[in-house]
Image 1: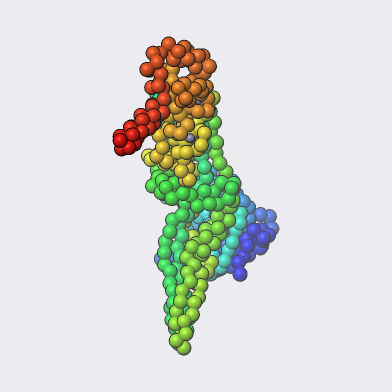
Image 2: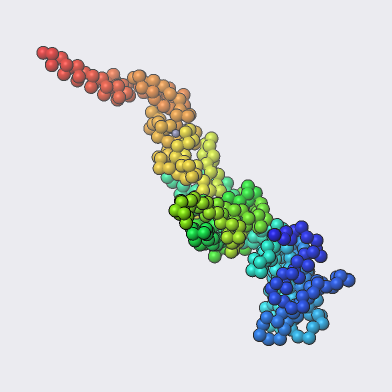
Length: 461
Ligand SMILES: [Zn+2]
Ligand SMILES: [Zn+2]
């Protein structure tokens, strides 16, 4: 039976904590009688160590977030605690501790002459619950993420990546590329370590067993948890050790970025953990066949139980994504990459796609190997089927914007009416033998026809 910590009153929560501490082996665990709140909810004695028994004062906070003042108050409560021997303090909460609260506890604990203060958050309580065989569940643990993979620091870096993508386009020189609009977005993600250990037995013995460790990378924005693409997951895993504090304040990010956005974790940590457990139960489900004592073959579906799947680590981190929008003529082209500070992974690239037919983009949002040509007339990017040679100037023009005209039964493409008129003038002035060259296919076809005719005629003779 799971104890849903969220459903308890503050006093009931203390009672559960008393139970937890007793299970952990503390002695003389007492829930303080409520008089004036002196910040001393539970007291107990820790005699597990080699030295003198330690007096422990516990403050229980049944709230979403515990700030520094609560830890400070506990600190002074321990300092004034009437106990004949060494003392330490514990703050237990169903939620989480703010960064200043954690810093305060660490500073006090690190000071050689001061007491130790342990902080038990909702996540740690769940772990302790597992260790002592109590299922403590808290839905209140918000994901607290203070780190990001290193983002690109300046607009030049981002623009250079756009330039590299645009360089694959035929007929588009880098000097034609305007400075793009660049934005930076930080997407919430989680690296979750899982352990699955399950054994399936029948009367004939073990029919199936699983023992596996897996690290999952999930996107954790408001759209709900989802597994990240394997290449993005690998990028995060490779960069997690380089994570840096999230940029604080406007001056921390290049001000030339048009926008800087932080995504929000859409669920509580417990919900992500539950999602991962369910996902792993499905992933490791197997249907096995085995032969019973009676020589009959049976089939059984082996699904790990919830307790067969353990989440051994949850590490939240923001994944930076840089997006550029480049205006060429009447069109805008997006390009985006995510980065771990070292490697970059392109996640959107419209420089590889024909604007008329979408050829060039593959199903995964990547680029298929298609030659893309820029139309200087309208700014479009085109596959081979949607681009022609402009007859007057000899440059590529797309079928979307070209003006056409018929010359020697062949369709010719022009930037505009004026160019077509100009070419019509040139055509009219051409010597008669030059005009058929406007339709080489027709000329070749006629030549082959004549040849066949000659062969047939000579054959007849
Ligand atoms: Zn096309
Ligand atoms: Zn065009």
